[in-house]
Length: 102
Image 1 (cartoon, one colour):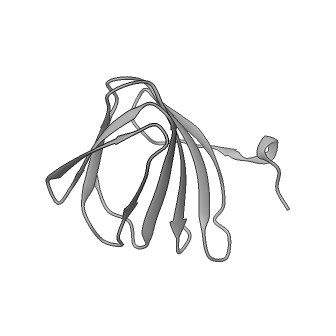
Image 2: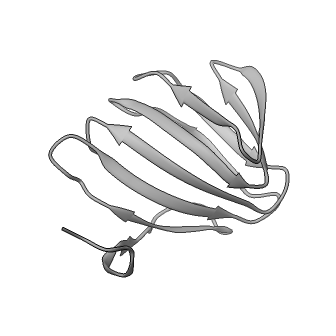
């Protein structure tokens, strides 16, 4: 079992995006991410689905170039293999799960 203080720091994202994650586990990866207002995450895909919940803030998400706004208290799912990108409209905190594990 891992506790939050044992989570690994997230590396490799754009400036203004930080976080921690547990994984990869056998079937999933769990992350908590902090987006500074204005940070943009470039177009990318995952081999598995992504389910995310915003604890605070607001994101503009583009999935196959269709735009969605997700706000504090809301959740979203991005199916496996779909291209997506995002922009933080406010300082944002999200909890994210990927399955299968990243």
